[in-house]
Image 1 (tube, one colour):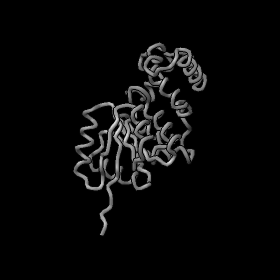
Image 2 (tube, rainbow, N blue to C red):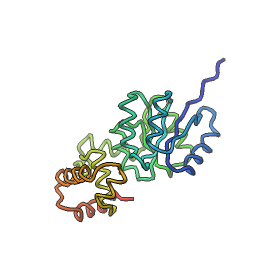
Image 3 (cartoon, rainbow, N blue to C red):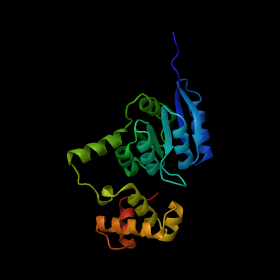
Length: 215
């Protein structure tokens, strides 16, 4: 009887120690193979163009481009690609946004190793991985049990700008970090302030702290 080939995984994380830890965990699993790794968005996109992957295991925070933006690009170029997002952020902060962007699942990095393996198997087999907490959040939104919060209506780039401004970064520093112009970041700032009906950075920062949007 033919032995099933293991799921070929591409790990994308800018921290070498995290990649090594993930590889160590998955090396003990027969049906999962870490076939390659990337340390930034650009490398991940290049590898996705070179060959197909059963699944991409990707951090939501990277130095050159956010995981959400990378996810959007991956899904645009490869509509069928399966991506499991990893993050240190609490699930309610990014999980629903990631799923709406096209992720097949979202897992906190503090999860147990066996939960990681289960999530990979589920996603690689074509299903979705959603934790009970995220399922409840999605159900609340769909059923109308709670009104959507102002920041939930922002685009991924606007949300990223919101968090960076609230963390104390000036517009010029955000522009440098995201490799965008100051004018573009200022446009995102003006747009998100209007959408959220906020007047200035002080109100924005207060909102982000109140909603627990900062690390």
